[in-house]
Length: 90
Image 1: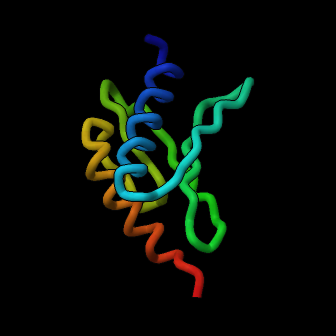
Image 2 (image 1 turned 180 degrees about the vertical axis):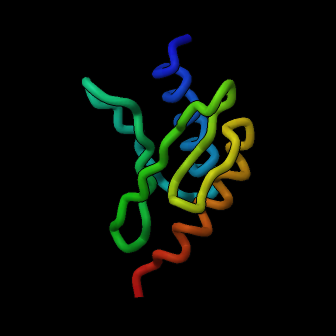
């Protein structure tokens, strides 16, 4: 499996975990770039989530303070859900 394929797999798994929490998302797969998961927020914002390889492990990254090992997509989904909840429209 190439690193691009592994990245895609990490993001799809995370998208499924977010779906279980009633949070919608979409994987964007550009022809000339890497996959990104866009998480829908109530205020219309699309939160970008990346999967990055560091040494031999994969990380899920969604902000300067949001990072979880990719082996825990359930934990990443719960933390991202908290970020989404903070963006609720007022």
